[in-house]
Amino acid sequence: MRRQSKWGLGAALTGLLWAGVCLAEGTAPSAFGPGEQAQYRVRYLGITAGTAQVTVGAPMTQWEQNVWPIVSVAKSDDVIGVWPIKSRFVSYWDAAGQRVAGSDLHSDENGKRRRQRIKMTADGASALVIKQKDSEAPRESTHELPPNTLDMTGATFALRNQALTVGREYVYSVFTGSRQFSMHAVVEAREVVSTGMGLREAFRVRVHTEFGGKLDTKRDLVAYLASDASHVPVRIEAEFSLGTVVAELTDYKPGRVVTVARAESPGG
Image (cartoon, rainbow, N blue to C red; front, side, top):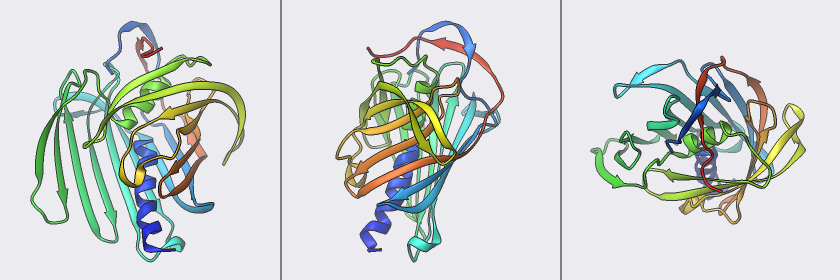
C-alpha cells in the first residue's frame, strides 16, 4: 500500500471513533452504561484494515467531576503496512448532565506520537486545548464555543440516548480541538442491515459533519444504530477524501443499566 494510504488509514480509524447539555424531562434508562463494549472490524478501500473497540469504563472523577470514560481504541492490522498505527481517544461523559467534561487523545503512527487534551467549561461554551507532538513542548490555546458543545463521541452517545424517530433531525455542536461545527443527524429509515454479527434491524442515520484535511468527506456519513434500546452503532459508512471506510459491529456486550435524566431532543 502506498505511504499516503497508510497514513490515511490512521486518520480514518481515528475519525470513525471521533465517529449539549439538554433540558431534563424526567428520568429514563440510559441507552448505554459502564461495562458496555463494542468491537468493530474496519474495512479500508474494500479490505480488512484494522479493528476498533469502544468501551464505557467504570465511573471515575476527572477534573473534580463525576464521569464515565468512553474509551475508543483503533489499530491497524500488521498485514496492511510496514508500520503500526494505534489511536486511543477517551471522552469523559457526564451522564447526569448529558455533556462531556473533556477528552484525551493519544495517537501513534510509525513511532510519531501526538497528544491532545481538551478541557471543557461546565456550560460547554469554551475549551482549553493542550497539544503536543513527540518531544516538542506542549502548546495551549483557548477556544470560545457555542453553548452545550460536545466532542464527536459525546454527540454520538447523546444521540443514542434519544428516542429516535424516522424523519427527525438532531443537531449537536461539535468541537474537535481545532474545528467547531454543527453535526446534523437525520433518521432516514428503519431497515435490516448486514453487520459482522449477522443481520440487524437498525435506524439508518445520515450524518453531516465538517471534518477537514484527510477526514474531509465527499458525502455525508451514514450510521446504522440498532433499533433496540441500546441504539449501539452496528455499521458506519464513510467516504473520506482518502478513501472509503466501513466499520461493522463484530461483538457487543451491554453495560449495566443506569437511570439518567431524560433529555429533550435537540434540533428539528
